[in-house]
Image 1 (spheres, rainbow, N blue to C red):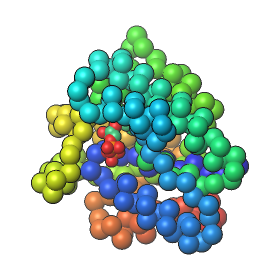
Image 2: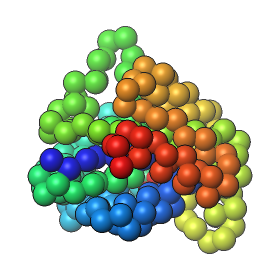
Image 3: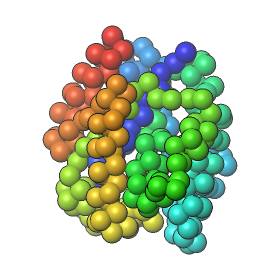
Image 4: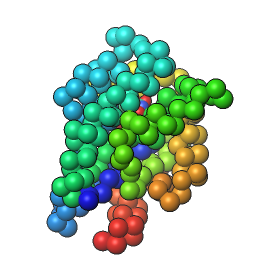
Length: 211
Ligand code: TYD
């Protein structure tokens, strides 16, 4: 079996750049690597991604949750499971912790009367990350980075445009998740230079997987 490493954190935390650098490093030491992301890395998923992020029709929170989970089930069965069976290293930009943070916590869906954790498990189709890297970055710094990106012409998505209080709830949920699952989730200090972030990643991956 291969390995699944998920990259998680708030918008603007730099995880996508780090994912690319990590893939290049793992390939340089002879590993077969699949780079993937959620939502949208399947033919059907790319359509779901448009529905979710384009902002043309804003879904109600319950619908938003179900669309992210629908995308995940398709992604796991179509891409992640076959790659795991081939023995690949799969680096996945966002997975269930994002749903936990954005839909369950920030949108307040997982309240006293709802226990939605089993639904998240259902959508994973039996797969769970071997390791999750949580890119911890203060929300104010992330917001500044997002502003710079937008000034450079990058288009923001419907969730990027949520209020700062929403992003604070997302950040608090990731912190809580890291605290409650220390075995799986590793905190990465994302407030330092790109090279230092990459050094941290390489160190924790080498240690965890005895590379
Ligand atoms: P994307 O443009 O892929 O950016 P990034 O991951 O670099 O922030 O945006 C994906 C958005 O979808 C992001 O704002 C987080 C959100 N999201 C959820 O709300 N729930 C989820 O389960 C997933 C996978 C993503």
